[in-house]
Structure formats: C-alpha cells, structure tokens
Length: 512
Ligand code: HEM
Image (cartoon, rainbow, N blue to C red; front, side, top):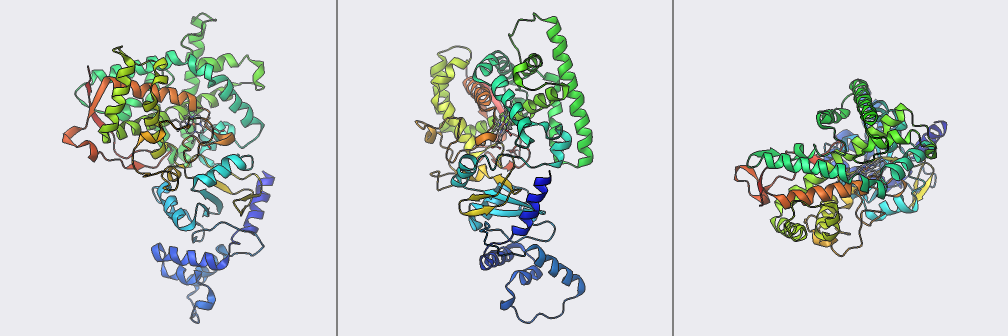
C-alpha cells in the first residue's frame, strides 16, 4: 500500500513531462473539437497570446487549476502523448458511452500508446497489437497487477477474486487452483456430461419455441456450466454493478446469500450420492472436494469457495452468452457464411441427432467462425485493467509505477495494419492459420495474455463450439417482420461485457 502511494507520488512529480510543444499542438487540436474557448486560451503557449486582460476571479481560479493540472516538468522522462485534460475529471469526458470507440479515435490522433488521466489516475491506453505484445509478453511481469477498484472490492469479496487481485501469492495460489484443478484439459473433458446436457436442454427449449419470435440472448443465457435453472434471474443483477456504491453493499449481501445457497445445495446433494462417483460433477462439487486437498497450498474456507464460485459464474456465463450471440448475429447477417457452416456440421454429423465433442475436431470452419466473431466482438473489449508495478521503459516511453493500463482489444481486432478489410466478417482468414486460442496471438486478444490471461479459454471454446454447432445444425434462423438479413442491427452497447444494443429477435425453424 505504502509503495503504491509512493509510486503515485513519484508519478505525479514525473507526469506531464512530454515535449511541451507537441502537447500544446494536441491540446489545440482537441480543443477545436470539443472544448470551451477559455480552455483553448489556457492551453496555448503564452508567447502566442495577446496580452491577457484581467480575468474575473472565478475564471482566474479555473485558469490556475488548468495550468496546475497541465503542468509539464521537464525531467528527462519521455512521457507518452496525452489528449488535453480538464481539472478534476482529467480525460473522463473523452470516454463517452462507448469508451472502446472513443479510445480508438483518440489513438488515431495520439498514437497506439497514449496517457490519459482518469480523474487523477494516470492511465496508459494500448491500441496496437505491437504495443499489446510488448506489454503482455516482453514486460508482462511489470504490468501483471491489478489496481484496487472500489465496486469490485465491495461486491466481489474484496481483492480475493482472481480477476481483481493484485499480483502476489494469493493471486498465484487461487489462479493455479483455477487453471490446474478446475479448468485443466482433463477437468474440462469431465464437464462434457454437464455441458452436453445444458446444450440438449437449450436445443429442446429452442425447438419448443419453433415458429415464434424469441430473444436469442435470453435463451443463450440459460446455458451455464451449472444446473442453476431458477438461479438464472440472479445474473441480471450484474447490470447493477454499474450503479452506486450504496447499492453495491446490498448486491454484495445478495451475492453472498445466493452463494451460500449454492454451496448448501451441493453439500446436501453430495451427502445423498455415492461418495466416489464423479459423474456429472460440476465446479462446486470439485471445489468441495478440494477443501480436503492439501496440495493446493491454500485452506479453502467458505469465503474462498464463494469467491471461486462467483468468479466462475461471472467469468463463464455472460462472456460465453455474449460471444455466442455475436457469432449468431454475424451468421444471420452473412448467409454465405451460415450456409458454409451448416454444410460443414451436416457433413460431419452424418444424420446423427446431435453434434458431440468428438465431432468438433473435424470442424475447422466452425472454429474459424468463432475466432472471427471474437475478433470483431471481444466480449471484454478493454480487457481487465492492469497496473504497472514498477517503472518501465515501454517502446521508448517512460511509464511510472502505479500507472493504470487499458488494452483496447476491440480496436486491435480492427486494426487495418494487422487485418485486411478489418470490418468484414470473413472466417476464412482463420482457416489454415496457426492461431489457436492459447498463448499470445498477434492482433487477436479476446482472452488477454501473459500471466493474466483468461483461465477459461479451453472451457469456453468447448461450450461455444458445441453450442453453436448444435444450433446451426438443428435450426435455420429468420428475422421477424421481414427484416432482411443484411439489415440486422449490429450496434453494441458497452458494459461489463459488450452486448448487442438491441435484442437478437429471431424465429427458429427446424432444418429437418
Ligand atoms: C468467451 C469467454 C471468455 C472471454 C472472452 C473471457 C475474457 C477474459 C479476459 C479478456 C480476461 C482478462 C485478461 C487479461 O487481463 O489479460 C479474463 C480474465 C479472467 N477470466 Fe475470462 N473470459 C471468458 C471465459 C471465462 C470463463 C469460462 C472463466 C471461468 C470459468 C473465466 C475466468 C476468468 C478469470 C478468473 C480471469 C482473471 C485472470 C487473472 O486476472 O489472472 N473466463 N477473461
């Protein structure tokens, strides 16, 4: 804590030391777009200004504040370019309702590494694959911690949750439990039974709604790794995390009660079952077993159990649902791709009633469709915010310890330097490509990378591939009210995950 404060103090001293003339140019450009006239005068070098008439006192205060906040000390540091910032809020006003887009636009002006000030917090924004590679590969150790965020601290068991834990022993232990015990290749295979029955259920639900218009997003949300059934409405509360801290206290209490219920249900189920049977085991069952496993190096008390369950809920439901919904949207919008995919799955299925896990390896186009959809619609468009643990030299720039870091995976997925015709949905670009879900791939970062990479990749790949293959194998999808496929609205809405703005309303029609 002390070292973080010290880092912030140093950062404040070193901040703003970018070449003054360049800063002023940028400031003026920004001003032309969106700033009030007074600020423009404040940001111009004083030598270019006519003699200043006396200012009213309130304007004088603003003037002093603006000067203070934009002061650049020249101490030999090479600080990344920054857009003009305002007193108190810094650059917050530039983010707007679609930060991924606003940051992309800003980066086109200021470059793929830029330094924003969100309030008083210096925040580095990476917008090219080259920079992302430097951060998540070359300097991963320096950038692999997380800042302390107020809402997750209240709602998600403080910094116990892996995704928001600072780098250190606690994070390492919990993450290794996730990676090695809960989401390893063997373990993911063992979830096959649960996953397949969830998908069977979803296909059955879709079949029941045959011919009527349904909200595909809501239906997909019923596809979870747990048999949570009636618990599902609980997930809509996640939206409220965007709300006020006061509400967060209440949400934390509700989360806790919900998770207590989940654990109790599983403990009781276990009591009634054969102790050695592992068929149909889910996450919670395995965690309960791990309580007696000394090799984890962690005593899995009730709070740890709840943390890991919650993390699996948050990590595995909305992200998978969002990804599938975008993939289906793209398929509907691009009938050529849909036809090609349906041809592939139909050939592999050879008349069997459903696609199983063993079939997936014979479906390269299915995998390409999902990768292409994740490129254009990464569910977590800005990844999860990181923080620099120490001073770093990043591509020639000096980044001070304590600087927050945002990686704009959404913008990188659309970077014309990396992707030919980046706005086209063309799965073929992933055919015969070495890109698999794992490790670090140039220009494609929907799961992050480095030490902080998502541990759920393998699991999600299986769920998404199996679900998508079965949906398109069984059903054709028609838009309501005679809307043409190519006119499907693809507007997105920024949030915890990036969802469609309007619901995906379709009629499903059985293919046979
Ligand atoms: C399509 C599905 C998913 C997507 C797109 C996704 C995406 C991400 C991203 C972008 C990150 C941040 C990576 C970074 O900071 O570099 C992340 C972290 C994480 N994800 Fe996922 N995720 C998905 C599914 C899952 C699932 C199924 C789980 C668990 C069951 C999961 C658990 C986590 C956890 C625990 C972290 C934090 C890792 C850390 O901070 O060390 N995710 N995910």
